[in-house]
Amino acid sequence: MKVLMLNGSSNLKGCTYTALEEVGKVLLEEGVDYEIFQIGPKPVRDCIGCRKCRDGRCVFTDDAVNEFVEKAYEADGFVFGSPVYFAHPSGRILSFLDRAFYCNSSDERYRAFKYKPGAVVVSARRGGTTASLDAIQKYFGIAQMPTVGSTYWNMVHGQNPDDVRKDEEGLQTMRNIGRNMAWMLKCFEAGKQNGIMLPNSELSYATNFIRQ
Image (cartoon, rainbow, N blue to C red; front, side, top):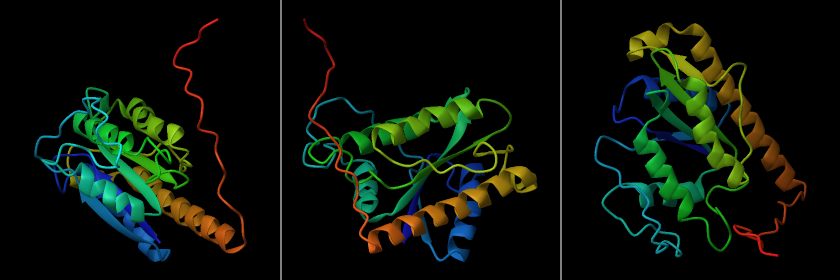
């Protein structure tokens, strides 16, 4: 089993990365592998709604979205991490996830993500964390992804990694995310081995307008 983590910060080894690493330590203890995928500091394009991604790949190839989606097919669970900017997730992670999820929205909807557990972690100096969590977790609801919680809201505080390492409650929250994620993955695997099939969801209706 493997968890794919996404660092939505342009700082490769900053506060968000530190939080993700703390989750990863526990996953390894629980026998679950993980990878931290870096969006990195390069520009990330917005989705332009061209719908040319029906084949499962985004038309833009000058950033890492398609590479991430390929890895997502093989992953068993996800952790999306973001710094908080102006009481909101980083713009780059929202642009990245818009395209990653949208290019999985036709045919078998969100097939790289659906029925796979996901968690969000955010890092902030002080405020805006719960609003940021709420914004990113909305991807889970539409993609039928079970949400992994913890013993507090999934956040750490600090202006740099050393500050985050002093946030004992935040680090504890990260470790409990790792434990809960590992437990959920093992439960899903046990279900498969005992013949419990995935749901057969209805997908035919899209009532974006109502007419009499």
